Length: 581
Image (tube, rainbow, N blue to C red):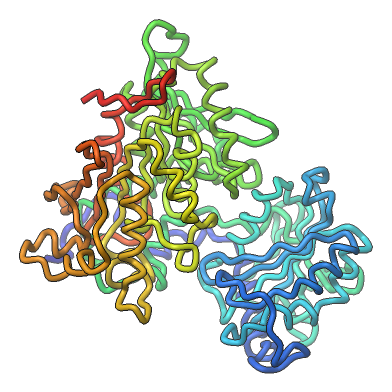
């Protein structure tokens, strides 16, 4: 039951107004351009040169790709990359030198647009309308990043797109230009936009932002380099409208021990802006933790190690590889990462483990993480037989696949905030769909897995998957794939769906068949725990479903995942799983 009188020191962390000073004023410029685009320059369905035509359908962007169009620009030296983030789609036309990561400091032109995405030709119509800009990109070697929304995006997802793009291609964001054609066409003075402040190179507000607009190969632009990043993480999405769900009571969450624990994480992010802040490093040092930045092949990774263990060689500690972005491109990212996983940092401070942070945006790039742990083991007393992987949302998918790619070295894995099953490629939101061939490969080895999710994952209904014409049977098939991947005896689709009518209320609530089930309490909230036994009778898959939580990293997740992970080790000679506890 909700008790609005449950209060604590950091309750204000859930008030969006508390974070106003952490928001980039550039967001208001983006919102205004998106508003103008939606009202005046929207790409309507059924209007454009490709109307009535069909190409290769991409389910992630809900659009047709046309190979002949892509080849045309490839011949001009541009690589096509198109995908989606949080309902916002983006397409980049990338000079080959940038694509091959030979050019680290290109100019990046950001072009915002608005389209009715019910028309699968929306993407090609956006692109062809900007052919002249793409032509300039090919001629002069800059990146054209086309970001398309379906309405004004108040969640600042376009900033996330820009961050994602910079990480994928490891570019410095020193030359980011925003196309302000919409302002020019409507004679909108940027100085009149409420909330918008343009900072000069000296960090002081410019009296007349309009005077800073310049021409860039025929496009009016405003330089937004080092001005666009917000200084808050996705954990604040607890306030976002899109994350609300019938099974997530925001007010009850905030006025509870769950909320209090998360607010302590948020406070760290609120108090410190960048990793270079001496006060941020001192915060951890006071609890006996060395937090340090390292470089590997021009990528940053972060370590958290108990100070009294530094230089120790006789005894060794397990290592948890936390898939979370800590890139050079955004100095606030390491702060946000340690704040989100504060509980793992505190476990490190107490001498339980060493935590390493790193994540890029592709499976191949993330293979570097094992090279990093080997490098870390030269500096820190890491027990390489007890290396674990974890991550949340798309980083949870990365952690899961990473563990299976390095199954003879990783002891166990904890994906967080993901589907209990392994959705088929047509249904997944994973950045790297898991094919049937991969499922069969995973089944050839033993990987202890604890999957921590919630009953209120965003956009998920009934069996925690999108509704389809098969009465949610796609979710049941996803669970079958998980059973196969973990080497467990399987259930039929009918048996999986029948759990929703199970006489046991705990099993019925969880919604998935498991061998053993119980309820635990963490931070005053119930966690439904179920285990599946593999064909050897070992409970090497645990499913934990948290009550009253949505799609964010909670304080409960490290605790419930570490309780399971630390029980396992890996025999590095045979690759076999060792049960320690």
